[in-house]
Amino acid sequence: MSLISRGIVVISSAVLVLCSAVAVHGQEVQRISAHSALLEVVRRVPISTEVAGRIISVTPSDEGVLVKAGDEMIRLDDAVIQAEVKRAKVELDLQTEIEFAKVSLEVAKAEEQQKREANQRRPGAFNPSEIRQVELEVKKGDASLRKAVDDKLIQEADLQIKQAQLAQYTVKAPFDGLVTLVKVFPGQNVRPGEQVLELTDMSVLRAQVKVPASLRRMLFVGDQVEIRVGEAKPVEGVRQAPGRRPGGSLFDGEGVAGASGAGDPAEFAAAEVQVGDSEDSVFLGEIRFIDPVLDNISGTPMTKLSVFVPNRQDQYGRYLLYQGMPVTATVLAKARN
Image 1 (cartoon, rainbow, N blue to C red):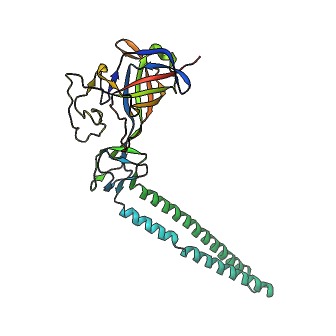
Image 2: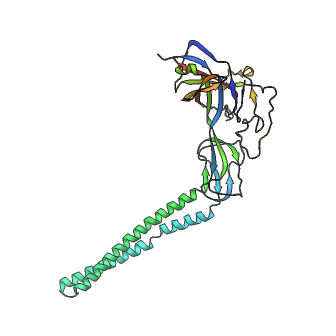
C-alpha cells in the first residue's frame, strides 16, 4: 500500500519478473513489473505579460479549456503603443528630407558645372575661392543626402522596435495545452511577469517508475514501458475532501486533478487496483532517464526510472491520461547479449 504525495497517486504492486522471453515488435523482451508507478504532468507553464498594463481580454476565461499553439490568450490595452506605431509608419513613409537633399545636391552640382565650364570658355571668370565654394556645396549636398538616407534607416529600426513593443501587449499560447488556472480577469492591472493563466501540456506525461535495483543491469534508456490504467478504491480511513482551495489550479500540488482536490490525499491499495485491458487503457512510454541514486522502500533498494508517456485523446477530444491516475507499469527490457 502506498500514499499519494502532493496530489500524485503512487500505485504499488508486488515485484514480479517474468523470466520467459516475450516477442514485442519482432524483438524478444523481458517483462519486468514495476514496484510502483507515479504519473505526473511534465510541463505546467505560468502565462504572464512582459509589460505592465490593463487587461482587455483573457481567453479562455474559464479553466479546463483546451487551446492551440498560437491562440491569443491575453490582450492588454495597447492604444498608446498603437498610436506610436502609426506615427512611426507615417514618419517612415515621408520622403521629404531625402527629396530635398537630392534637389540640393543637384543644384550644387549644376552650379559647379556651370562655373567650371565658364572658366574653360573664359579663363579667370571665377577665381579659385569661388570654385572651392561650389565644391563645398556639392560635398555638403552629398552629405545631407546620405544623412537623410541614414535617418530613414533609423526610422525603420524605430518602427520595428515599436512593433516589437506592440507585440508584447498580446500573449499567445506557446503550445497546445489545457488551461488549468485563471488568476486575473479583464479590467485588472498587471505588472510585468505577473501570472495571469497557467497552461498545462497534456500531450506527454511522465511516469516515475521504480523497479528493484537488482534488475538495473537489464534496463536501458530507450526501452519501452507499458503503462496500464487501472481503477482503485480509497483506502479505508482516508478522507477525500471535494472541491478546491480558492486560487488553486486544476493540478494543485495538494490535490489530485479532477479527484480529491486540495483536501487530504487519497490513498489506493495495490490489491484493489484493477488493470484495464481495453485499447484506451494501455499506453507505451519510453525510458528517458535512469536515476543514478537508489531509492529505498522498506529497506529494499530501488532504481528510479523517468518514463515519458505520449497521451491520447478520445473521440470527444478529452485526454485519457492525467496526473493522479492509478496506473501500473511493466518495463519491456530488450534482450541483449
